[in-house]
Image (cartoon, rainbow, N blue to C red; front, side, top):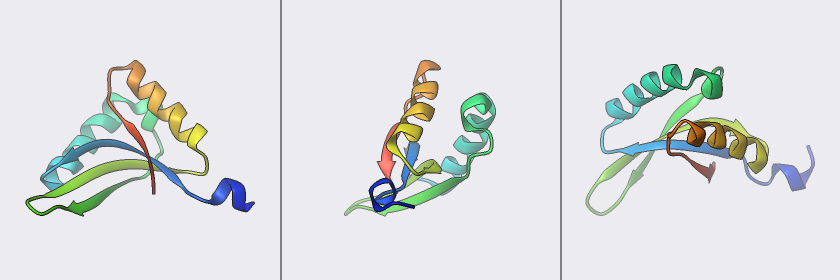
Length: 88
């Protein structure tokens, strides 16, 4: 793989919650509701701590390019599902 395309992997962030279980439940719900966009994609929960809280960010996919991640996010936004393309 060339360095240019492989600098960062991208993911699509779906939600951020204060509870890991809530993020897992959202994946179950969203992966059914948006099966056309999310079918076959892996998911992970990324934990981030701030001074006051811990947030659990639900992310899906591991894309080689921003274009591929954007395409998934666009499909979701067309169905009124917020999402964000992030660096992994």
